[in-house]
Picture 1 (cartoon, one colour):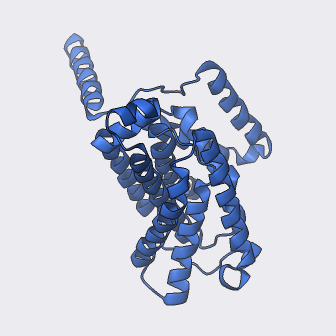
Picture 2 (cartoon, rainbow, N blue to C red):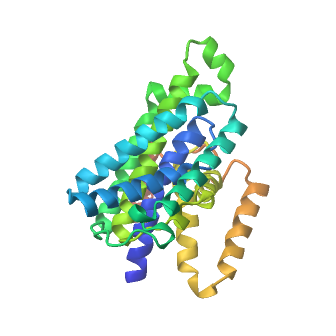
Picture 3 (tube, rainbow, N blue to C red):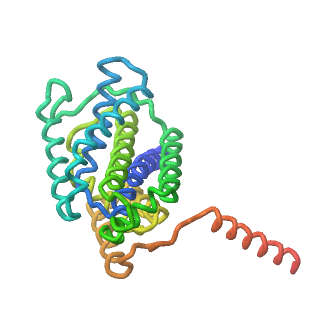
Length: 293
């Protein structure tokens, strides 16, 4: 039971971060290899605010997210004007710089040894509620005019500009929302684990999130959530296989890339209409079986 709760909590925290990646990559078409840096900012800032200043957890979360968004705005000013391939390089450099900065600021962050003494206030219900709220927020954003503008920019930026869409502005909005969500995931992570170190937030973490989005379906929020759930939970349940679990993980990703290039779910999206239709079919089938018996 303890293993299941641990996996559930970590999956929920990952889902919050993946929601941010979906907004950035799935909706807007921007590839970032530095998103984990904003998770690090959220994790360290919230932890330090609580430890050093003694402020309540909720206040530390809010301040940490605002700090990440402010830094994201500064980084985003040049990033949103770059071509997509250059965005990956710039964000990669930013992410690695943050990791090195956390190591060098030994007097404040604990350096390579990490930050200790963070109160473990986040339990699985909080993580689950956070994931649900994040998914709902992103779903609403996708259905809003901003979400539609993001999709238009992703499809054809020049055509979107011709239609009167300010592509730099809409990409900045998506970038800042992504920063806020990944920072929120960092806050949850630090107050769940009670400890963070710079090695957790390298570029590989960002790459893992991007893989999760593509695995489930880069054009589908449902697919991204599904992919993140599978790929983040699988290694946890396969610990007994030790190093072989990563082989299985890699094989699954390779198979999806080759046979389902649009991801497991493609562009399919789970909507309230789909849920109602599914329950209606189940109800009709149940009534039919009852009459036959």
